[in-house]
Length: 74
Image (tube, rainbow, N blue to C red):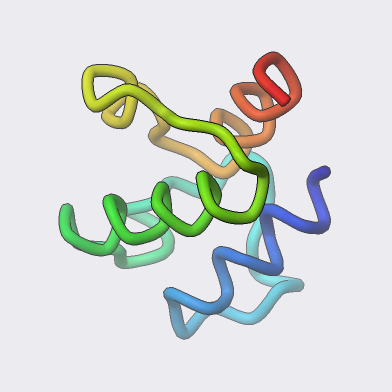
């Protein structure tokens, strides 16, 4: 799961896969804007066939948060 999340994140940032860790912040470390975060969430929803409620999107602040969320809901 971790590798897949990191791979998808590299499609939205200039940071290479080896530069992304579970503690990497989506906005602070990866430089994603609010719109980018929404696009990332849509990519994860499509990839894993789930729906992430709007009120839970902003709880996903790091790559690790995404991994944890997906592991709990997929």
